[in-house]
Image (cartoon, rainbow, N blue to C red; front, side):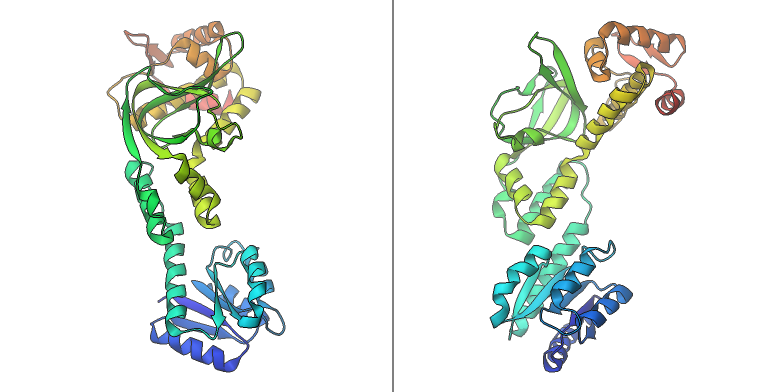
Amino acid sequence: MTKILLIEDNQDVRENTAEILELANYEVNTAEDGKKGLEVAMRIQPDIIICDIMMPEMNGYDVLLHLSKDKTMASTPFIFLTAKTERIDVRKGMNLGADDYLTKPFEESELLDAVASRLNKHSFLKKEFSKDIEGVNQFFNDVSVHEGMESLSEGRELETLNKKDFIFMEGDVANTLYFIQKGTIKTYKTTESGKCLVTGIFGPGQFIGQLSLLTNKGTYRDTATVLEQAEVFKIPKADFTTLLFGDKLISNKFITMISNDLIDLQEQLISMAFATVRQRLAKALMDLSKIETLNNTKNKGINISREDLASLMGTATETAIRMLTDFKDEALISFGSHREIIIEDKKTLKDIVLFG
């Protein structure tokens, strides 16, 4: 049964509100002031808290502030109860992280609707979405239902791209976020001398283009091209900005979804800065192998040019080729008929990544 904590110093309001909630089949725990309410909250870990603002011992603001600093309670839905004369103080509560507020006196339906709405939203935020088109679609559709953002369920499409096709070019107007359902995508920047610097290799379950959508220039920071036949899911910039700058809890959920590849990029940069060339090659091969596995292709090896591999490692092409030869001589890899790289000893490659 869903547990509700009601913190209210007025006995009549507390008892009447508790009765309404109990008749709606909620388990209700009560406290007559903020200090006791905080103690009860930490003890019972309620599913939602309804709290008056002006109370003795500890006011509602302080209760919310204390709970927001506790990892186990920080995400618990929190509804303020406020008298009409206190409505000007509601903004303070919302800024502290309150999810909603009710003005006393309130109708029974207002109370129950507010509780149901916040519980449903909290359930949505705890939900895990799969790293495929179905999962992304489900996320957008669920947001549409919970937030009334009907436009989020429209205007997205799947595009199939062939090897060497461009998804976007450096300097193009950035108006789309892309989710990779299938295939391998390379992003790169072109230097003044005309040399290509690979900025990332991406596969199924990852997003590309998000940083470009946030820049003041409004253009893509690099070029994205297809290494292996790909299926990409196009998300309009309008949806991206609505989710990013709207409700803060949904924004956090959305950021978590789209930032997985940024974490990988951070790890890659650290690797390039401190790892040996041997470690960098081993890590690049393991990462590329993982993408091949996600794509579930029939390829026996990794198809990547030696130039792209060297750029991904942050070294010269000649150095990458020489290190590949060393790996071949150690029976860690072999080469296919079309120069694809076949991993023969994953365990040793993993050990090289970790220990050099």
